[in-house]
Figure 1 (cartoon, rainbow, N blue to C red):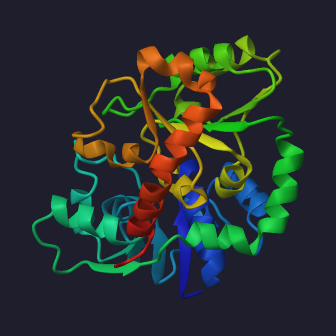
Figure 2 (cartoon, rainbow, N blue to C red):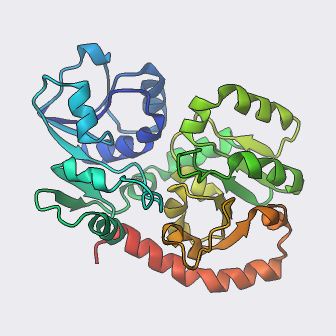
Length: 326
Protein backbone atom coordinates (compact mmCIF):
# COMPACT_ATOMS: atom_id res chain seq x y z
CA UNK A 1 0.00 0.00 0.00
CA UNK A 2 1.69 3.15 -1.24
CA UNK A 3 -1.02 5.68 -0.34
CA UNK A 4 -4.18 5.89 1.75
CA UNK A 5 -6.60 8.31 3.32
CA UNK A 6 -6.40 8.67 7.10
CA UNK A 7 -8.56 9.71 10.04
CA UNK A 8 -6.67 8.70 13.16
CA UNK A 9 -9.16 10.04 15.74
CA UNK A 10 -12.95 10.42 16.01
CA UNK A 11 -13.28 13.46 13.72
CA UNK A 12 -16.62 12.45 12.23
CA UNK A 13 -16.87 15.60 10.11
CA UNK A 14 -13.88 14.42 8.03
CA UNK A 15 -15.59 11.21 6.88
CA UNK A 16 -17.79 12.65 4.14
CA UNK A 17 -14.74 14.21 2.52
CA UNK A 18 -12.10 11.53 2.70
CA UNK A 19 -14.46 8.63 1.97
CA UNK A 20 -15.67 9.94 -1.42
CA UNK A 21 -12.15 11.10 -2.34
CA UNK A 22 -10.62 7.71 -1.58
CA UNK A 23 -13.42 5.78 -3.28
CA UNK A 24 -13.10 7.86 -6.46
CA UNK A 25 -9.33 7.47 -6.55
CA UNK A 26 -9.16 3.78 -5.66
CA UNK A 27 -7.45 4.42 -2.33
CA UNK A 28 -8.17 2.72 1.00
CA UNK A 29 -9.27 4.81 3.95
CA UNK A 30 -7.57 4.04 7.26
CA UNK A 31 -9.79 4.60 10.30
CA UNK A 32 -8.74 4.12 13.90
CA UNK A 33 -12.17 4.54 15.53
CA UNK A 34 -14.93 1.91 15.19
CA UNK A 35 -17.47 4.74 15.42
CA UNK A 36 -16.26 5.92 12.01
CA UNK A 37 -15.46 2.56 10.43
CA UNK A 38 -19.04 1.32 10.69
CA UNK A 39 -20.73 4.24 8.84
CA UNK A 40 -17.87 4.33 6.33
CA UNK A 41 -18.69 0.77 5.29
CA UNK A 42 -22.44 1.39 5.35
CA UNK A 43 -22.74 4.68 3.49
CA UNK A 44 -19.91 4.77 0.92
CA UNK A 45 -20.15 2.23 -1.91
CA UNK A 46 -16.83 1.15 -3.41
CA UNK A 47 -14.76 2.32 -0.43
CA UNK A 48 -12.07 0.06 1.01
CA UNK A 49 -11.96 0.57 4.78
CA UNK A 50 -8.92 -0.43 6.83
CA UNK A 51 -9.78 -0.39 10.52
CA UNK A 52 -6.83 -0.48 12.90
CA UNK A 53 -6.13 0.94 16.37
CA UNK A 54 -4.04 4.10 16.38
CA UNK A 55 -1.30 2.56 18.52
CA UNK A 56 -0.86 -0.30 16.02
CA UNK A 57 -0.94 1.80 12.88
CA UNK A 58 1.95 1.85 10.43
CA UNK A 59 1.54 4.69 7.97
CA UNK A 60 1.96 4.18 4.23
CA UNK A 61 4.54 6.31 2.40
CA UNK A 62 1.85 8.78 1.30
CA UNK A 63 -1.10 9.97 3.42
CA UNK A 64 -4.13 12.03 2.41
CA UNK A 65 -5.79 13.60 5.42
CA UNK A 66 -7.94 16.49 6.63
CA UNK A 67 -5.67 16.67 9.66
CA UNK A 68 -3.08 19.46 9.30
CA UNK A 69 0.49 18.28 8.90
CA UNK A 70 1.68 19.46 12.38
CA UNK A 71 -1.07 17.33 13.95
CA UNK A 72 0.00 14.30 11.93
CA UNK A 73 3.61 14.83 13.00
CA UNK A 74 2.56 15.03 16.64
CA UNK A 75 0.48 11.86 16.37
CA UNK A 76 3.18 9.91 14.52
CA UNK A 77 6.50 11.46 15.62
CA UNK A 78 8.69 8.60 14.44
CA UNK A 79 6.99 7.90 11.10
CA UNK A 80 8.36 8.95 7.73
CA UNK A 81 5.64 9.87 5.26
CA UNK A 82 4.48 12.48 2.78
CA UNK A 83 1.17 14.16 3.59
CA UNK A 84 -1.41 15.79 1.34
CA UNK A 85 -4.09 17.96 2.95
CA UNK A 86 -7.71 17.57 1.84
CA UNK A 87 -10.17 20.32 2.87
CA UNK A 88 -13.21 19.24 4.85
CA UNK A 89 -15.55 21.60 3.08
CA UNK A 90 -15.31 25.25 2.20
CA UNK A 91 -17.04 28.07 4.05
CA UNK A 92 -16.57 31.77 4.70
CA UNK A 93 -15.04 31.08 8.10
CA UNK A 94 -11.33 31.69 8.53
CA UNK A 95 -11.08 35.45 8.09
CA UNK A 96 -10.97 36.00 11.86
CA UNK A 97 -8.47 33.22 12.59
CA UNK A 98 -5.47 31.49 11.08
CA UNK A 99 -7.18 28.65 9.20
CA UNK A 100 -5.64 29.48 5.84
CA UNK A 101 -2.32 30.55 7.35
CA UNK A 102 -1.85 27.06 8.77
CA UNK A 103 -1.57 25.71 5.23
CA UNK A 104 1.95 27.08 4.98
CA UNK A 105 3.03 23.95 6.87
CA UNK A 106 1.75 21.67 4.09
CA UNK A 107 3.62 20.34 1.07
CA UNK A 108 0.62 19.41 -1.06
CA UNK A 109 -2.94 20.66 -0.66
CA UNK A 110 -6.04 19.78 -2.62
CA UNK A 111 -8.27 22.74 -3.42
CA UNK A 112 -11.79 22.84 -4.82
CA UNK A 113 -11.14 25.67 -7.24
CA UNK A 114 -10.36 29.33 -7.78
CA UNK A 115 -12.11 30.73 -4.73
CA UNK A 116 -10.15 28.61 -2.29
CA UNK A 117 -6.90 29.43 -4.09
CA UNK A 118 -7.71 33.15 -3.87
CA UNK A 119 -8.54 32.90 -0.16
CA UNK A 120 -5.30 31.05 0.59
CA UNK A 121 -3.23 33.66 -1.24
CA UNK A 122 -5.12 36.49 0.46
CA UNK A 123 -4.10 35.17 3.89
CA UNK A 124 -0.52 34.25 2.94
CA UNK A 125 2.03 36.49 1.25
CA UNK A 126 3.90 33.62 -0.33
CA UNK A 127 3.56 29.85 -0.43
CA UNK A 128 6.41 28.89 -2.78
CA UNK A 129 6.78 25.36 -1.48
CA UNK A 130 3.08 24.42 -1.40
CA UNK A 131 1.75 22.42 -4.33
CA UNK A 132 -1.95 23.17 -4.94
CA UNK A 133 -3.96 20.55 -6.83
CA UNK A 134 -7.51 21.51 -7.94
CA UNK A 135 -10.01 18.67 -7.52
CA UNK A 136 -13.32 20.42 -8.19
CA UNK A 137 -16.53 19.13 -6.64
CA UNK A 138 -15.44 15.52 -6.28
CA UNK A 139 -18.12 14.79 -3.66
CA UNK A 140 -20.87 15.71 -6.13
CA UNK A 141 -19.23 13.50 -8.75
CA UNK A 142 -19.13 10.60 -6.30
CA UNK A 143 -22.79 11.14 -5.41
CA UNK A 144 -23.81 11.18 -9.07
CA UNK A 145 -22.02 7.86 -9.60
CA UNK A 146 -23.99 6.30 -6.73
CA UNK A 147 -27.26 8.21 -7.04
CA UNK A 148 -29.55 5.17 -7.18
CA UNK A 149 -28.04 3.74 -3.99
CA UNK A 150 -28.42 7.01 -2.10
CA UNK A 151 -31.87 7.90 -3.38
CA UNK A 152 -33.39 4.69 -2.04
CA UNK A 153 -31.46 5.05 1.21
CA UNK A 154 -32.63 8.61 1.88
CA UNK A 155 -36.26 7.87 1.06
CA UNK A 156 -36.27 4.99 3.54
CA UNK A 157 -34.33 6.80 6.26
CA UNK A 158 -36.05 10.19 6.05
CA UNK A 159 -39.67 9.81 4.91
CA UNK A 160 -40.59 13.43 4.26
CA UNK A 161 -43.71 15.24 3.09
CA UNK A 162 -44.47 18.59 1.53
CA UNK A 163 -41.66 21.08 1.05
CA UNK A 164 -38.47 19.70 2.56
CA UNK A 165 -36.13 22.14 4.31
CA UNK A 166 -32.65 21.19 5.48
CA UNK A 167 -31.37 23.16 8.47
CA UNK A 168 -27.62 22.55 8.74
CA UNK A 169 -26.01 25.07 11.11
CA UNK A 170 -22.35 25.20 11.98
CA UNK A 171 -21.05 24.51 15.50
CA UNK A 172 -20.41 27.00 18.29
CA UNK A 173 -16.87 27.88 17.26
CA UNK A 174 -14.81 30.73 18.68
CA UNK A 175 -16.16 33.03 15.96
CA UNK A 176 -19.66 32.54 17.43
CA UNK A 177 -21.09 31.59 14.04
CA UNK A 178 -23.77 29.09 15.05
CA UNK A 179 -27.46 29.95 14.94
CA UNK A 180 -28.58 26.56 16.20
CA UNK A 181 -29.71 27.04 19.79
CA UNK A 182 -31.44 30.32 19.07
CA UNK A 183 -33.04 29.47 15.74
CA UNK A 184 -34.20 25.87 16.10
CA UNK A 185 -37.03 26.58 18.61
CA UNK A 186 -38.35 29.35 16.34
CA UNK A 187 -38.16 27.20 13.22
CA UNK A 188 -39.89 24.34 15.01
CA UNK A 189 -42.68 26.63 16.26
CA UNK A 190 -43.43 28.07 12.82
CA UNK A 191 -42.90 24.98 10.64
CA UNK A 192 -46.16 24.27 8.72
CA UNK A 193 -47.69 20.86 9.37
CA UNK A 194 -47.64 20.08 5.65
CA UNK A 195 -43.84 20.53 5.36
CA UNK A 196 -40.74 18.74 6.69
CA UNK A 197 -37.66 20.09 8.43
CA UNK A 198 -34.50 17.99 8.40
CA UNK A 199 -32.22 19.14 11.22
CA UNK A 200 -28.54 18.27 10.85
CA UNK A 201 -26.49 19.53 13.83
CA UNK A 202 -22.77 19.82 13.25
CA UNK A 203 -20.84 16.73 14.46
CA UNK A 204 -18.94 18.97 16.90
CA UNK A 205 -22.26 20.11 18.39
CA UNK A 206 -23.36 16.50 18.77
CA UNK A 207 -20.10 15.53 20.48
CA UNK A 208 -19.85 18.53 22.80
CA UNK A 209 -23.50 19.01 23.83
CA UNK A 210 -24.93 15.51 24.23
CA UNK A 211 -27.24 16.19 27.19
CA UNK A 212 -28.40 19.59 25.93
CA UNK A 213 -29.11 18.20 22.48
CA UNK A 214 -31.05 15.24 23.84
CA UNK A 215 -33.16 17.60 25.91
CA UNK A 216 -33.91 19.73 22.86
CA UNK A 217 -34.78 16.72 20.73
CA UNK A 218 -37.09 15.43 23.45
CA UNK A 219 -38.99 18.71 23.37
CA UNK A 220 -39.98 18.07 19.75
CA UNK A 221 -40.30 14.30 19.72
CA UNK A 222 -44.04 14.54 19.01
CA UNK A 223 -43.51 16.90 16.07
CA UNK A 224 -43.28 14.19 13.43
CA UNK A 225 -42.35 16.52 10.58
CA UNK A 226 -39.04 17.37 12.26
CA UNK A 227 -36.49 14.70 11.34
CA UNK A 228 -33.08 14.68 13.02
CA UNK A 229 -29.96 13.81 11.02
CA UNK A 230 -27.43 12.66 13.61
CA UNK A 231 -25.54 9.67 12.20
CA UNK A 232 -25.96 9.99 8.45
CA UNK A 233 -22.64 11.44 7.15
CA UNK A 234 -23.21 11.80 3.36
CA UNK A 235 -24.55 15.28 2.66
CA UNK A 236 -25.26 15.28 -1.08
CA UNK A 237 -28.10 12.71 -0.88
CA UNK A 238 -29.82 15.02 1.62
CA UNK A 239 -29.24 18.09 -0.54
CA UNK A 240 -30.78 16.32 -3.53
CA UNK A 241 -33.85 15.53 -1.41
CA UNK A 242 -34.36 19.07 -0.12
CA UNK A 243 -36.28 21.95 -1.68
CA UNK A 244 -34.50 24.62 0.38
CA UNK A 245 -31.40 25.08 2.53
CA UNK A 246 -31.27 26.91 5.86
CA UNK A 247 -27.87 27.62 7.41
CA UNK A 248 -25.46 30.14 8.84
CA UNK A 249 -21.73 29.62 8.22
CA UNK A 250 -21.60 25.91 7.44
CA UNK A 251 -19.72 24.72 4.36
CA UNK A 252 -22.89 22.82 3.40
CA UNK A 253 -24.18 26.08 1.96
CA UNK A 254 -21.48 25.94 -0.72
CA UNK A 255 -22.31 22.27 -1.35
CA UNK A 256 -25.94 23.22 -2.02
CA UNK A 257 -25.08 25.75 -4.73
CA UNK A 258 -25.01 23.20 -7.56
CA UNK A 259 -28.70 22.39 -6.99
CA UNK A 260 -29.60 26.08 -7.44
CA UNK A 261 -32.55 26.04 -5.05
CA UNK A 262 -33.69 28.53 -2.40
CA UNK A 263 -31.20 29.35 0.36
CA UNK A 264 -31.85 31.08 3.68
CA UNK A 265 -29.04 32.37 5.90
CA UNK A 266 -29.54 32.96 9.63
CA UNK A 267 -27.16 35.40 11.27
CA UNK A 268 -27.43 35.98 15.00
CA UNK A 269 -24.70 38.62 14.92
CA UNK A 270 -26.43 41.12 12.67
CA UNK A 271 -23.65 41.32 10.09
CA UNK A 272 -24.21 43.27 6.91
CA UNK A 273 -23.95 40.63 4.20
CA UNK A 274 -23.18 43.30 1.61
CA UNK A 275 -20.01 44.46 3.33
CA UNK A 276 -18.82 41.67 5.67
CA UNK A 277 -15.90 39.79 4.11
CA UNK A 278 -16.86 36.56 5.83
CA UNK A 279 -20.41 36.48 4.42
CA UNK A 280 -19.67 36.03 0.73
CA UNK A 281 -22.16 33.17 0.33
CA UNK A 282 -25.02 35.24 1.77
CA UNK A 283 -25.45 36.95 -1.61
CA UNK A 284 -26.88 33.64 -2.87
CA UNK A 285 -30.08 33.74 -0.83
CA UNK A 286 -32.19 35.56 1.73
CA UNK A 287 -30.37 36.79 4.85
CA UNK A 288 -32.54 36.78 7.96
CA UNK A 289 -31.61 38.42 11.25
CA UNK A 290 -32.60 36.88 14.58
CA UNK A 291 -35.84 38.86 14.83
CA UNK A 292 -36.83 37.57 11.38
CA UNK A 293 -36.30 33.83 11.94
CA UNK A 294 -40.00 33.26 12.59
CA UNK A 295 -40.94 34.62 9.16
CA UNK A 296 -38.95 32.10 7.13
CA UNK A 297 -41.73 29.60 6.45
CA UNK A 298 -44.38 32.27 5.95
CA UNK A 299 -42.74 33.79 2.89
CA UNK A 300 -45.42 33.58 0.23
CA UNK A 301 -44.88 32.01 -3.18
CA UNK A 302 -44.68 35.33 -5.03
CA UNK A 303 -41.87 36.44 -2.73
CA UNK A 304 -40.05 33.13 -3.23
CA UNK A 305 -40.43 33.43 -7.01
CA UNK A 306 -39.05 36.95 -6.94
CA UNK A 307 -36.13 35.83 -4.80
CA UNK A 308 -35.37 32.99 -7.17
CA UNK A 309 -35.22 35.28 -10.18
CA UNK A 310 -32.77 37.38 -8.19
CA UNK A 311 -30.50 34.63 -6.87
CA UNK A 312 -30.32 31.86 -9.47
CA UNK A 313 -27.68 33.50 -11.64
CA UNK A 314 -25.42 34.49 -8.75
CA UNK A 315 -25.62 30.95 -7.34
CA UNK A 316 -24.40 29.57 -10.66
CA UNK A 317 -21.56 32.09 -10.71
CA UNK A 318 -20.43 31.42 -7.13
CA UNK A 319 -20.66 27.65 -7.63
CA UNK A 320 -18.46 27.85 -10.71
CA UNK A 321 -15.96 30.13 -8.94
CA UNK A 322 -15.82 27.79 -5.94
CA UNK A 323 -15.48 24.43 -7.66
CA UNK A 324 -13.55 25.13 -10.85
CA UNK A 325 -10.18 26.67 -11.67
CA UNK A 326 -10.68 29.56 -14.05
